[in-house]
Image 1 (spheres, rainbow, N blue to C red):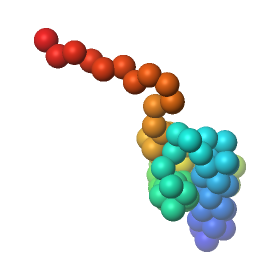
Image 2 (image 1 turned 180 degrees about the vertical axis):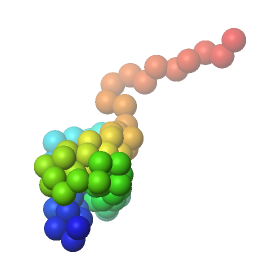
Image 3 (image 1 turned 90 degrees about the horizontal axis):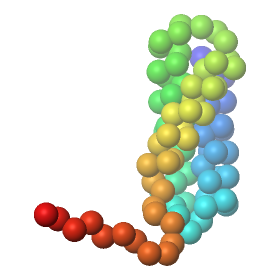
Image 4 (image 1 turned 90 degrees about the vertical axis):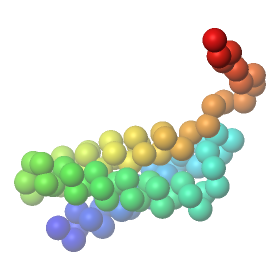
Length: 89
């Protein structure tokens, strides 16, 4: 279980680092992005381990990567350019 937690934390950190390198203009400061990736991966590993109750590291890391990517996607800002305003009725 310690190997699962350590592996998922490293995976979440790698995903968050890649996101900050790839999309620096659409993400907030790396001080917020990096812990979000790690926390998302740890939570994903916990949920996957609890739901499947397997010792399969690949499946647990897959769940960790999915939840980490989902939590990082919540931090994305709209791309540059024109922001559309919605008129209220």
